[in-house]
Each structure stands twice: as structure tokens, then as C-alpha cells.
Amino acid sequence: EIMPSLVGSEMCIRDRLMACKTPAECFRALADKGWGAGGETSAEAIFAAEEEKTWALMHELLPDLTPFSVLLYPIDFNNMKAAVKCTVTNAEPHNVFMSGGTVEPEKMQQAVRENDFSLLPDFMAEAAKKATDALLTTRDGQRCDIILDRACLTAIHKTGKESKNALITAFSEFKVAAADIKIAARALHTGKSRAFLEESLAPCDTLDLEELIDAASKDTDTFYAYLSRTDYADGVKALKDGFSAFEKWCDDRQTALVKEISRQDYFTVAPLLGYVTARQNEISTVRIIISGKQNNLPDERIRARLRDL
Image (cartoon, rainbow, N blue to C red; front, side, top):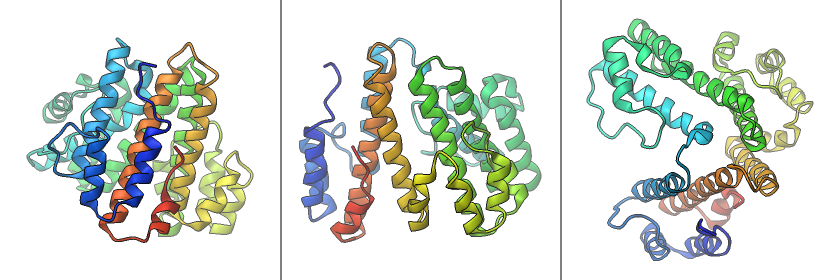
């Protein structure tokens, strides 16, 4: 009862936004529902304020946010990318760091600047050094991203495997598997090499990486045939419909997973993890609506992209 309800009132936000004709009307509707901290001049500022509210509530409820690491690692590794690129290129890091991670961006910058990666936690140190070396020697920003993205997925999977909480374990497994499928699918469509796949994909329990790499190195029929034999067979149709449809399928399946487990596990962190993921999904849905309005997309196209809440 402490946590704001996501049922009813927040569903009205989605419906009200869809009825708006312009982005300006959307912003007024969000303000009426208490979104933002007041005075924001952009959609992204409003979304950032809502993320901050969500995490502020978790800090209020829990003294230690370690159970939320699987949600915070993507922030950490996005900040690590920025730290490496800004430091190596001597660029000023203006508005490049996200708030709320487990590692301070200043510490990341110091580690790169001083070439002392022992300043960073174990889950990040080796990858940060490798990414920095790659950018220094090749100036290949994409390879720097690949190294850190894979390290992020590896950290999420390791945390899930070590957790005694069923939701964290299942959530982590799905996040890594879904990311691997997206990477493999994009690699197939853009003609990336087998070496690219081997460096990019992170191990997980529900996918055989060798089979996935073999399939993605051949053709779409082989790729879809492999996925049809996995736990993610019901996502093949969405993948055939395009990456946007598959992104929606991933988000909706994650919502169903979180809903099912968190409702059965009342006395652990699971309901709080469920709340945070629901809020993030809600913010994503609002972002899709406003983006659609800004780009004058027909309502039916916007609705087709909306996630389950």
C-alpha cells in the first residue's frame, strides 16, 4: 500500500495521452497526473524525473539496493562507455552520464585516466580495461561498445545465477537471452561475421550459443528454425514482423514473467523488483506515445507499439 498504484490511474494516463492531439497536450496531461518534478521543458527530463522518483522510493524502503543490481548494471555500463570515450578523446562529459548506477562516473573516469582499473568493481574492471585499450589502439567505438555490452550481460547473468530469489534469477536469464537473440538477429540482417557474434554474445542457460551463432551465420530460415526449438519459439513471429515488434514481444513477456513470480513471492524483494520494472515499462510506454505524437504517426500505429502494463 506504500507504493503508488499502477492500476487504474496509470492506465488512464495512457488513454488520456492517446486522446491528446499534440505533444504539448501530452505534457499538460502528464503534469496533471503528477509526472515530473515541475518545470521540465522536455519529455526526456520528465522521464528522468520519474525514474528518480522510482529509485528514491526504493531507497526509502530498502537500506541496500544490491538486489536491484540486474536493473542498475545497464546504467553502469552505459556510463562506462561514456567515461572511456570522453577520457580517451579528451572530450568534456556534458550530460553523458546517467544517474542511479552502482558505480560513480567520477570513479570510472579516474580509472581510465590513471589506467588503474583496480578502482572499479570486479564485474566491470577487466572489460573496462579491454574496452579502453581497444579504443586507444583502434579508435573503434563500436568494438568498445561490444566489449562493455557483453560484460554487462555477463554481470546480469552471474548475479541472477547467484541469487536465491526466483524472480531475479528468471528475470536475469530472460534479459540475457533476449539480448543475445536481438544481437544475433541484427548481425544476420547486416551481414556481420562469426567473429563478431562470438565476441558479442553472452552465455546463458536457455540458449546454446554455438547453435545460435551457427544459425545466425547462415540464413534467416536456419535462424528461425533454431529459435523455434528454444524457450523463445513464440517470439519468432514477432521477429519476422520486425525489430519493433520483437522489442514489444520482449517487453510484454518480461511483464508477464515479473507479474507471475512477484505475485507468488510476497515476502522477498520480488514485489519491489516487480514495481520498478512496471514503472520502467510505463515510462517506456509514455515515451512511445509522445514520440508518436511528435512524429505525427497515426494512432493505430502508436497503439500497435504499446506495451502491456
